[in-house]
Length: 283
Image 1 (cartoon, helix red, strand yellow):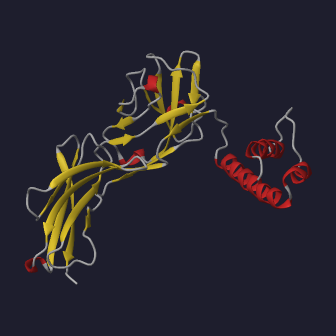
Image 2 (image 1 turned 180 degrees about the vertical axis):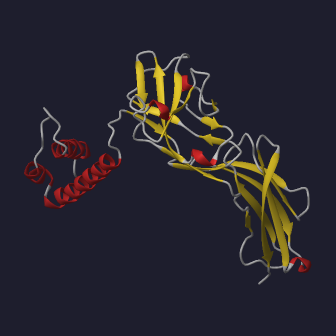
Image 3 (image 1 turned 90 degrees about the horizontal axis):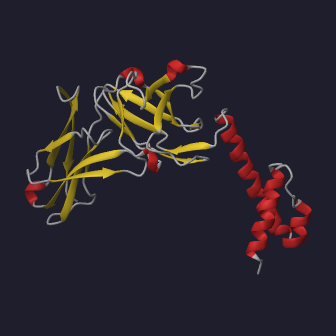
């Protein structure tokens, strides 16, 4: 059996050689083959090639070198007139941020020194272009932000930056694409397949929730004691749901479920609505 530690050490050196790390000892492909054999060498050379292709692709898509990164959704959808929550945590070559740290959001191009007009929000200032609120603690590397009163013209890429004394860093390779719609998303109705009379089933109606601070209201033509849920999805978006457990009878065959969603906009002064219908049929 191969020595896994020796295998990893040799692979690391082989990868380093592939990336031409200055001053680092390189294990050659021939040395690797002598140690582990032709089959293992072929497998790891293919792996190394794939990794190098991925790194090259990243370099091509991010022309601005960065040692500071954020974990945030690549894209988010917002509804015009309401708010949008941007889940965000930062990492990388960073100092420990303090209570005086400022969070900055930059639109379109991360090179804000060249394009200062692209700065839309700086938490250390009062005269900002956008109304934004950090609900995450920057001292805990949490940059989660709520963008208020979203406008259609806000559709663009956004970059996060931290300014804390001598520590200044922009996540120039991690844009968050925000797309703003003036149309409401229709709710989604979920009914189990292959329904039979006397089955006990859970019926669900759900709606995209771009801003948990201002969730939509869901209503349907089932009984009013439906259970309401609020769920955070794996990609950082949120969903509002209503559910109802029912035991099917013959009167339910062919019954049409209507589910409506109402999104408050302009601080609740108006609403935008959408409706979905679905008919349940027995086998």
